[in-house]
Length: 402
Image (cartoon, rainbow, N blue to C red; front, side, top):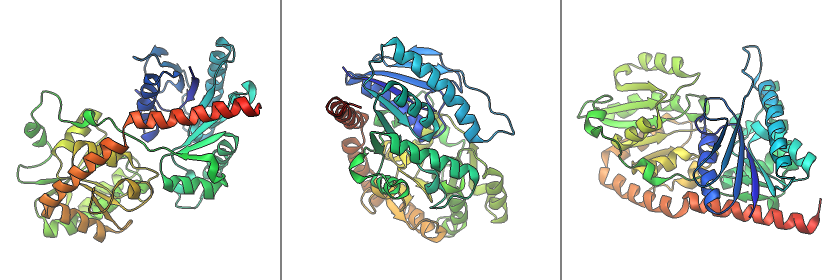
C-alpha cells in the first residue's frame, strides 16, 4: 500500500479557490483506491485539529499564524510553512520514515514540501494549479510576484514529477520554468455531478424569486471578483445584451477587491436594477443558482483550468466562456458550450444573446456537456491517473536510489 503525505494551503472547511476544492475531493478518491493518505494543512477556518475521514484519510490541521496588516503574503506563507514542515516531519518520523510520496499542491506549501523531501529523502510530486506569471498575463510587476515566481520555479525543479490540470498549463510550466516535457503529467480537475442536482426542501421557484422576476432570464457568474476572472467584462456586456434581450437579469456571486468598482460601474452604465450582486454564497446557494440560471458565464482573462465550467456542466446549465487557458479545452464551441473572444464585451454579449435566444440549441449543448463531464471529469478517473503518477515515481525511486 502506498503511503502519501499531501501538503495543501486550503482544505475543507477553508476553501478560497480551486486548490482547496480539488484537494478536498481528491483525497477521499485516493483513499478509495487503497492509498494511505495523510494531509497536512493550516487551520484557517475551523475544523478538527486531527480528523479521520470516511475511507481512512487522516487530516492534520496545523495552527497557523495570523497575518498582520503590514505583512506581505510571502512572509505569511513562510511562517505557515515552518509549522507545516514541523508537523509533517513528526508524522514521517512516527511512521519510521516509510512514506512513498510527498505531494505538494501549489507554491503556498512549496517550502515545507521541499524541506521534508530533502530531510527525509522522499520523492516529491508537485501539482501546479496556476502561476504568478500567468496571472500577470506573462509579466511580473512587483517584488512579491517575483518572489512567488521564484518559489514556483524551485518547486518544479525539486519535484520528481509535475502535475498540471490542462495542456495550457503544461505549456505554461514548460515555458516559464524550463521544465522538461517528459517530467510533466496532465491530469484534469473534476466535480461530483450528483452534488449539482436540485436538492433540499426549498422550492426552486420560491428560491428564484429572491433574485429575479418570473419573466426574467438569469445570467449567472460565480467567482472571485478580481481582474483575471473577468466579472468587469460581464458588467460591460450587460447593456449590450439588454438591447436585444430586455428581460435578462445578471446575478454575480463572489467577493473581492473589484466589488466597489463593479457596483459603481453598473450605476454609470444605467443598469443597477438589472445586475444583482450576492456577495459570497454557500455551495448550496451557488448550486441552486446554477439550477435556476438560463446561462452560466465565465469571461476569464486567465484560467488554468476553469472548474466553474465543470460545475455548470454538472448542473446542466448552458455555458458561455472566454476562449482562454483550460476553459478552451473543457468547453468546445457549439458542442458543449459557446466560446467567445477574451477581453471583448461585444463578443461576450453575442454569446449570451445567442444562448438566450435559441434555448433549443442551448439545451442540446448542455446534454453534450453533461455526457462529456461524466466520461472525462470524474474524481474516480482523476484519482486513477494520480495513482499512476505515484506508482511511477515510487517505482523509479526504487531503481534509481537517491
